[in-house]
Length: 139
Image (cartoon, rainbow, N blue to C red):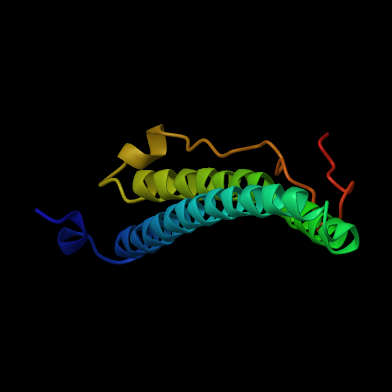
C-alpha cells in the first residue's frame, strides 16, 4: 500500500516533499553521470589533439604551440569536473538527510518523537567560484 494514500495533513506534506527531493536527487545523479562521461570523452579527445599538435610542431611550430596552449587550458578547465562532482555529492548527501528527516516526521503516531534525524554538519568541500588555472583551493 502506498503510504501517501493513508496519510493526511502535515504527514502528507512530508511525504510529498520527500518524493520531490528524491526526484531531484535522481536528477542530480544523472547530471553527475553525464558530466563524468562528457569530461572523460573530452579529455581523451584533447589528448589526441595534443599528440597531433606535437606532430605538427616540426612544420608549423607557432601554430602547434598555440594549439597546445589552448588544449592545456581546456584540460585545466576540465579538471574542475572533479570539484563539481564533489559539490553534487555533498548536495545529494544533504538532500538524502532531509528525506530521512521527512520520513521520520511522517511516521504514524508518536513514533517520530522517539527518533532524532541526523543532518550533515560538515561544510561544503568545494569553495571554488571560478575556474582559472592555479585557482583550485584544495583545503
